[in-house]
Image (cartoon, rainbow, N blue to C red):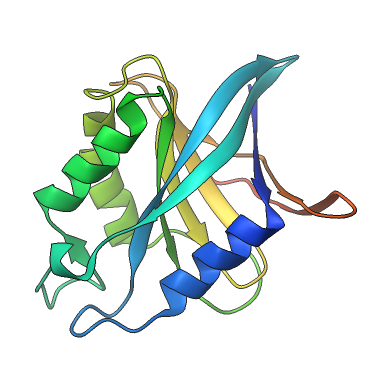
Length: 172
């Protein structure tokens, strides 16, 4: 199955600006995207609807990771995906240029918290994205308890519409 994600250029620029902001103690910022999902020939298309930054007060001090967010941030994200039903994507950046990769912490924590997104919206896929300054990598869980699949295409919608990058990443 092929998975594509479309996002408007203005929204993607806003996400990158927000994730680049400094936080009082966290070493990086995180946020959430909500997206509609539709079956397309040979796969699935996600169309990003909105971006939700994690509020400053929802970060928790943890020197072992770049950013830790609390249950309040997760609850707010889950509520946003509930109605209208939406795919929920955790997003953060590693900066730089080129194809980013997930860290071991990203993959370990994602395997723990992404399945929880299915409690708020069982019939939608949910996942993780990591951005660089010009590319992205993504994983998507189609069902709770099943392995993730790669998001194969990331399409920035601008004038003109341009496929800016593509990525493939698999989680064991």
